[in-house]
Image 1: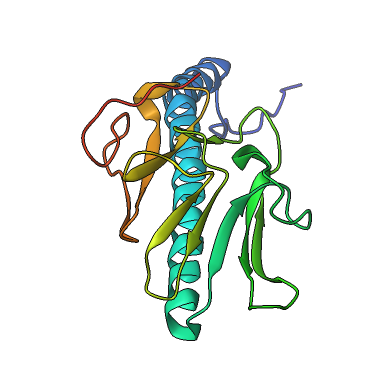
Image 2 (image 1 turned 180 degrees about the vertical axis):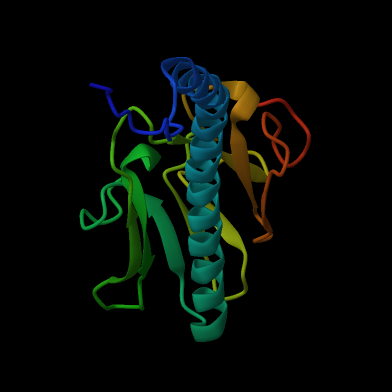
Length: 189
Protein backbone atom coordinates (compact mmCIF):
# COMPACT_ATOMS: atom_id res chain seq x y z
CA UNK A 1 0.00 0.00 0.00
CA UNK A 2 1.27 3.31 -0.99
CA UNK A 3 1.03 6.36 1.31
CA UNK A 4 -0.42 9.50 -0.10
CA UNK A 5 1.30 12.62 1.09
CA UNK A 6 -0.06 16.08 0.90
CA UNK A 7 1.96 18.49 -1.18
CA UNK A 8 4.36 20.60 0.81
CA UNK A 9 2.93 24.07 1.33
CA UNK A 10 5.36 26.82 2.30
CA UNK A 11 4.60 27.99 5.82
CA UNK A 12 3.62 31.57 6.38
CA UNK A 13 4.78 33.39 9.48
CA UNK A 14 7.97 34.38 11.19
CA UNK A 15 10.81 32.27 12.37
CA UNK A 16 12.06 32.67 15.90
CA UNK A 17 15.22 34.36 14.63
CA UNK A 18 13.25 36.94 12.63
CA UNK A 19 11.11 37.70 15.66
CA UNK A 20 14.16 38.14 17.93
CA UNK A 21 15.88 40.47 15.44
CA UNK A 22 12.72 42.59 15.17
CA UNK A 23 12.41 42.82 18.95
CA UNK A 24 16.09 43.78 19.29
CA UNK A 25 15.68 46.60 16.76
CA UNK A 26 12.53 47.83 18.56
CA UNK A 27 14.32 47.87 21.93
CA UNK A 28 17.26 49.83 20.50
CA UNK A 29 14.92 52.41 18.95
CA UNK A 30 13.02 52.75 22.24
CA UNK A 31 16.28 53.30 24.15
CA UNK A 32 17.12 56.13 21.78
CA UNK A 33 13.65 57.72 21.87
CA UNK A 34 12.89 57.68 25.63
CA UNK A 35 15.54 60.23 26.73
CA UNK A 36 14.50 62.59 23.93
CA UNK A 37 10.86 62.28 24.94
CA UNK A 38 11.75 63.08 28.57
CA UNK A 39 13.67 66.19 27.51
CA UNK A 40 10.81 67.29 25.27
CA UNK A 41 8.31 66.83 28.12
CA UNK A 42 10.45 68.80 30.61
CA UNK A 43 10.93 71.61 28.07
CA UNK A 44 7.19 71.76 27.41
CA UNK A 45 6.38 71.99 31.14
CA UNK A 46 8.97 74.71 31.71
CA UNK A 47 7.90 76.73 28.67
CA UNK A 48 4.23 76.39 29.58
CA UNK A 49 4.90 77.81 33.05
CA UNK A 50 6.91 80.72 31.62
CA UNK A 51 4.18 81.47 29.07
CA UNK A 52 1.43 81.39 31.72
CA UNK A 53 3.40 83.74 33.97
CA UNK A 54 4.12 86.21 31.16
CA UNK A 55 0.44 86.11 30.12
CA UNK A 56 -0.68 86.86 33.70
CA UNK A 57 1.78 89.76 33.99
CA UNK A 58 0.64 91.25 30.66
CA UNK A 59 -3.00 90.77 31.66
CA UNK A 60 -2.43 92.59 34.96
CA UNK A 61 -0.66 95.47 33.24
CA UNK A 62 -3.39 95.76 30.60
CA UNK A 63 -6.11 95.75 33.26
CA UNK A 64 -4.30 98.49 35.20
CA UNK A 65 -3.93 100.61 32.06
CA UNK A 66 -7.48 100.07 30.78
CA UNK A 67 -9.25 100.66 34.09
CA UNK A 68 -6.73 103.08 35.61
CA UNK A 69 -6.68 100.97 38.78
CA UNK A 70 -3.83 99.24 40.54
CA UNK A 71 -3.62 95.57 39.59
CA UNK A 72 -1.31 93.20 41.43
CA UNK A 73 0.26 89.87 40.52
CA UNK A 74 1.17 88.22 43.80
CA UNK A 75 2.76 84.93 44.79
CA UNK A 76 0.98 82.35 46.85
CA UNK A 77 -1.67 79.71 46.90
CA UNK A 78 -4.62 80.88 44.78
CA UNK A 79 -7.52 81.84 47.00
CA UNK A 80 -5.32 82.83 49.94
CA UNK A 81 -5.07 86.46 48.87
CA UNK A 82 -1.88 88.46 48.54
CA UNK A 83 -0.32 87.41 51.83
CA UNK A 84 3.31 87.17 50.76
CA UNK A 85 3.30 83.52 49.72
CA UNK A 86 5.79 81.64 47.61
CA UNK A 87 5.89 81.64 43.81
CA UNK A 88 6.29 77.86 43.92
CA UNK A 89 2.61 77.59 44.98
CA UNK A 90 1.27 79.73 42.15
CA UNK A 91 0.00 83.28 41.79
CA UNK A 92 -3.08 85.48 41.62
CA UNK A 93 -3.96 88.58 39.64
CA UNK A 94 -5.88 90.90 41.96
CA UNK A 95 -7.44 94.28 41.34
CA UNK A 96 -7.92 96.58 44.31
CA UNK A 97 -10.40 99.36 43.53
CA UNK A 98 -10.19 102.33 45.92
CA UNK A 99 -12.16 101.71 49.14
CA UNK A 100 -13.47 98.37 47.89
CA UNK A 101 -12.84 94.70 48.43
CA UNK A 102 -10.03 93.39 46.18
CA UNK A 103 -11.25 91.40 43.19
CA UNK A 104 -9.38 88.27 42.09
CA UNK A 105 -9.23 88.40 38.30
CA UNK A 106 -7.39 85.15 37.64
CA UNK A 107 -5.31 82.52 39.43
CA UNK A 108 -2.67 79.98 38.50
CA UNK A 109 -1.97 77.10 40.87
CA UNK A 110 1.19 75.01 40.68
CA UNK A 111 0.95 71.37 41.69
CA UNK A 112 3.97 70.21 43.65
CA UNK A 113 5.56 67.13 42.11
CA UNK A 114 9.01 65.92 41.19
CA UNK A 115 8.49 66.94 37.56
CA UNK A 116 6.91 70.37 38.13
CA UNK A 117 9.32 73.24 37.49
CA UNK A 118 9.96 75.56 40.43
CA UNK A 119 9.37 79.29 40.25
CA UNK A 120 11.36 81.70 42.46
CA UNK A 121 12.03 85.44 42.58
CA UNK A 122 15.75 86.20 42.36
CA UNK A 123 15.55 89.26 44.67
CA UNK A 124 12.70 87.95 46.80
CA UNK A 125 9.71 89.84 45.43
CA UNK A 126 6.36 88.40 46.43
CA UNK A 127 4.38 90.51 43.98
CA UNK A 128 4.21 93.23 41.36
CA UNK A 129 1.74 96.13 41.48
CA UNK A 130 0.94 97.70 38.12
CA UNK A 131 -0.39 101.25 38.37
CA UNK A 132 -2.76 102.98 35.97
CA UNK A 133 0.19 104.41 34.04
CA UNK A 134 1.74 100.95 33.53
CA UNK A 135 4.63 101.37 35.95
CA UNK A 136 5.52 98.59 38.39
CA UNK A 137 6.03 98.68 42.13
CA UNK A 138 7.86 95.67 43.52
CA UNK A 139 6.43 94.06 46.66
CA UNK A 140 8.41 94.41 48.90
CA UNK A 141 10.28 97.42 47.54
CA UNK A 142 13.59 96.62 45.82
CA UNK A 143 16.55 98.86 45.18
CA UNK A 144 17.11 97.70 41.60
CA UNK A 145 15.13 98.50 38.51
CA UNK A 146 14.32 94.91 37.57
CA UNK A 147 13.30 91.61 39.11
CA UNK A 148 13.73 88.17 37.62
CA UNK A 149 11.47 85.19 38.21
CA UNK A 150 13.40 82.06 37.35
CA UNK A 151 11.95 78.70 36.36
CA UNK A 152 14.11 75.69 37.20
CA UNK A 153 13.52 71.96 36.90
CA UNK A 154 15.45 68.78 37.70
CA UNK A 155 18.04 69.58 35.01
CA UNK A 156 19.37 72.59 36.92
CA UNK A 157 20.63 75.96 35.69
CA UNK A 158 21.54 74.77 32.19
CA UNK A 159 17.84 74.36 31.34
CA UNK A 160 16.46 77.26 33.43
CA UNK A 161 14.52 80.18 31.99
CA UNK A 162 13.66 83.56 33.47
CA UNK A 163 11.07 86.29 33.19
CA UNK A 164 12.25 89.88 33.65
CA UNK A 165 9.95 92.57 35.03
CA UNK A 166 11.24 96.16 34.96
CA UNK A 167 9.90 99.18 36.84
CA UNK A 168 8.76 100.66 33.53
CA UNK A 169 6.37 97.72 33.08
CA UNK A 170 8.43 96.00 30.41
CA UNK A 171 8.08 92.21 30.63
CA UNK A 172 10.22 89.75 28.72
CA UNK A 173 11.20 86.11 29.00
CA UNK A 174 14.52 84.53 28.19
CA UNK A 175 14.74 82.51 25.02
CA UNK A 176 18.07 80.85 25.72
CA UNK A 177 17.97 78.19 28.46
CA UNK A 178 20.42 78.94 31.26
CA UNK A 179 20.49 82.69 30.64
CA UNK A 180 18.33 85.55 31.90
CA UNK A 181 16.92 87.95 29.28
CA UNK A 182 19.84 90.33 29.96
CA UNK A 183 22.36 87.55 29.20
CA UNK A 184 23.49 86.79 32.77
CA UNK A 185 23.79 83.17 33.81
CA UNK A 186 21.00 81.73 35.94
CA UNK A 187 21.63 79.67 39.07
CA UNK A 188 19.20 77.07 40.35
CA UNK A 189 19.13 75.66 43.85
